[in-house]
Length: 330
Image: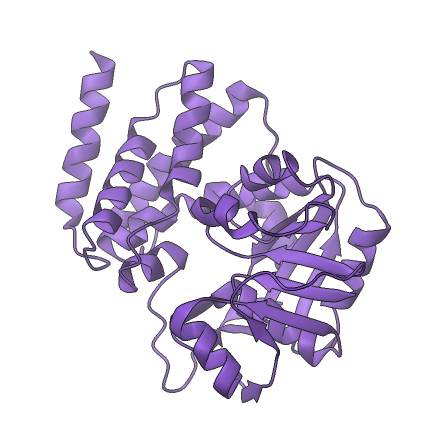
């Protein structure tokens, strides 16, 4: 098979690099300066152990298709429709994305859709360069057919992702991939907090308290909606110490995907599909979601106004949340 990775940033670049190292046919799709760097110099993959420059074919848009093509979509959720607009609808699509709305969106046009739950701490802030911070494996990926099940293609994708077996990726075929992705969604609610006020440092930290409020609100919504989700205990048991974050000499680890969106001043952020997913489910099922609504709104405002990450005082964010909670309780 040929794996076409649409969105060769932090996650897509790492997945594409590891597939390439495993001997698979890979094409990276990127835009602008990142595409130019990939085309001229290759992809520079930096890990806690090695730095390699990989000569992986790259393009800046759709290419003539092959019967064995598999699209791995690794863009932000807000870019899903535009990213797939010009690709043939008879190709299988693997949604290697945060959030839980992409698979349903893609299924409107593509008949073969696969979910991928991604645990892969990486960053992309410089054209042509991706830093993957986890050790001994760069990431753990759960893959399954959408809306459920495991078929031959899902099994083959998992097999291919697991090569090379050392230092690459850990992949699992699961019939309930969306349950795992809803569990990951609960973790990703912290993305907006990190982007707005900085890292959460522990259970007694004020930022962690905001995250706890957002997650408690979300679990209440998902429970009332009858939506299953994996638990942190399950995730820790499966992941173990296979994907531990380690420092990389000479590389400062800034933050997750939403933090990176603000750092790059991209003008958009994924909050509508993370905190906003909880807001949507709350509206559908009559459950107030003031914490996630404030996080969604403020993350979008910071992206729109191109404000840098961690530029909002924690006290300001807490005040906005408390004000919204009080207004909804009246």
